[in-house]
Length: 343
Image (tube, rainbow, N blue to C red):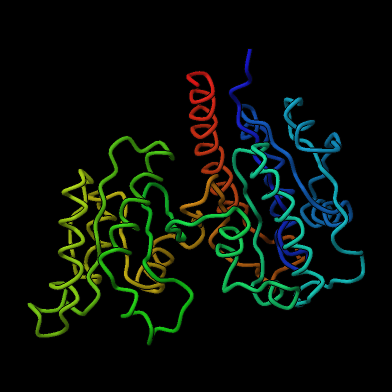
């Protein structure tokens, strides 16, 4: 019988941050791993250090490749050599740490392209370290997209429980944000977050679109993007059968979403959604990389250099990120098996 359980690849993140500690804490929560295959990918010494800091020792069987990982019921460890011990110190942005992250993630992405893993959950990374270590992209999402050969629309989702947000522009200067407010991008972002929520198990996602200007443009007297771009985009989504509404003033739409009126909000630029989500629940947030061939998730916080190595890291967001990766990976695995059966 074909094994329908997904294989989730987990990485340790930047060795100078709290990632290794978080993963050691995560792997202590054994019920999380009962219905999935899990492979931890990373350097032996980084994994050992994470266990030491967390005070959570683990005995994981070692495997030589991803195919071997699927043969085990419990979590396994796939060792790699991406950074030498002593090349990285806690709380330091280094090329060695950034190159390590890129190398491990590339190994997981190669496995994803080969159909060997169904989802990836990565511990926090540091963008500056990654750029020092060779990252040529504006962020990790663009690195993932190029590595996986993505040609369509993609964006980050930030999630808090069942509330997800997407955005039509991301890590760009705010002065450039208006140029990204296009009907094409709004429609693409709305479709993508709706379909991704369905993959995450929300049967009928309700999507709201935020306005760009203060007070929704005040009838065109405070900007016309709502009238000329956003409203037509919402109508186009609805014409395609997507349950999309808006635009709503950005300073009030999150109140409606908090009260359960919507499952998702499409925002017009990075901080429009990030500030609201982080105020509502910074210690529980998750980032999901949307528009890729497989689900990729991570806790929404960073490497927390101020507490790295001190045994203080909160595993909550990492637990949430892993749970989302498992849920989406399971649904993707089922889709793949159904497609293979019908072919």
